[in-house]
Length: 189
Image (tube, rainbow, N blue to C red):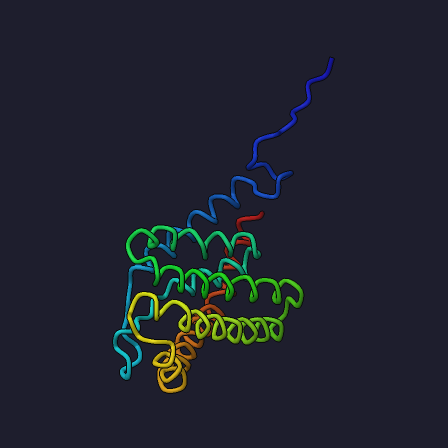
């Protein structure tokens, strides 16, 4: 009678999420959560719109470790914010999730420098669309600004702010991705 080790725990490699992947996901999620509380006014025309760098962490996690890790990292930090600022959290969650999933999916398909640039560009467009549509629906619900007022803000405020945010996230994620991938690859040995 031979002994066989049959792993059925949900964090085994057979399940696709080994202990190392869960730990990496937890570290990236913690970093994204901490950075989600850093709010910087980056657009002088609308100082009430704040940039938080958590999107960089989400993008890097998705690009380096795939859409599954990226989705978790993009989602969990905003669950905490749902209890404090639900409307802002819904907007941030939607933008982080679409950006991360689109970028990770495109980059997984075309894993090259050109693929990275394409992934960041396509995900940036997707994020911009979600941000504009989200503002049209959510802003009137909590601010009292009618939809017509939000429409008037699209070109002078919402598009430039979101393009700036998207550009910062994309550039920093592209710069950080290589070192993160090298560290991940070294950890595989």
